[in-house]
Length: 441
Ligand SMILES: *Cc1c(COP(=O)(O)O)cnc(C)c1O
Image 1: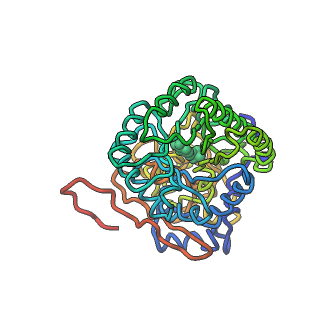
Image 2 (image 1 turned 120 degrees about the vertical axis):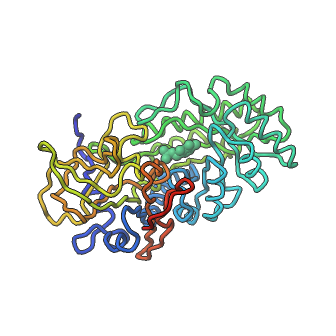
Image 3 (image 1 turned 90 degrees about the horizontal axis):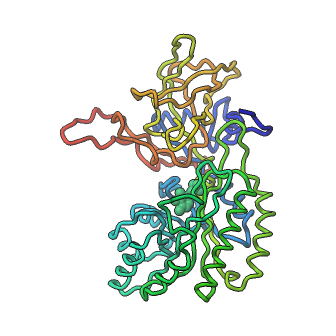
């Protein structure tokens, strides 16, 4: 595969965290100081880097859109709290995420609830305790939400999630233009608006569109957003009144693999200026609150997964590093979380020490060849006990992984904020079936 200029090698990404005495450091704290205290494997998040991502994006979309943090990317309330502190709302996809958002300090009216299968008890909980907007995704939900609203004597603010007819090009996963379980097909927009308008317990506030994820091209993203604005206009025309909200979705990408470059926020800002011109010319959407709901972009670069080398071995000419952490904590790094082509996440030795690097295969402790964390890593000749860090791991890490497989303990999570370290999830035991004792540790 050709490697365009400006690729992002692992060392550059590691340098963004900083170093101390030749060792990778987060917020000025050496990685080994964190793992000595909190054990390995370990997830480490840097609050300053989260704020930096948030502020850079907020600046690029200033005057155009507000930001809602998509909490499924990393649902730890301490992580979400960093974004709430910056002024973000929260996008949730379950009642448990609602509780996490509340624990993070989000006001109920700053929470949006999306997702293709919301249970009646989840809907009842958020309607009872307050919710900014529920995104309707199927006809059953129209009736379900209306019935709960009527029973509780509430008018529920709802938006329609629309599955766009045109695919966003350039994202790793495409969620538009083809059959989808998410939302209503764009072709049905008018009919669904009529169905919602017929329910007195529902107030149709806006539309929601989310066409693709891991988009690194600002023009692709802006094109998708323009499509969303046009769709909002079409919905408002049919509705015969202005929309209150337009949710353009998440999907902003971050570079993981060699050859990928970061989203160009300066370019995005230029394109946003054009979008603002479009919006201002249309009275039916001019007053609407435009929202974007990124997850990965805000938290991905701020996190790393640290693990310890248990063995360094050779098999028929290939060098293997066996770590104490693997795909049961970090499925995405193993390439098994929806990736079509398995490519290596950026991975570094915590103490490179100026050693020569050579290709090696990095595996976890699970008894399956799926537990491969890197196939062509460029790492020094690491020895047992050394620390390895997988970068770009703040999003879709621990909670997107099969933590029960092989019944290892779950790793702790720590948040570093300006030199102060908080354990935000203790190292834990995967809940064993009844009758199995705990070895501790
Ligand atoms: C997952 C999700 C997001 C966040 O996606 P990213 O690719 O992490 O930005 C946003 N909105 C909805 C509805 C989602 O399901």
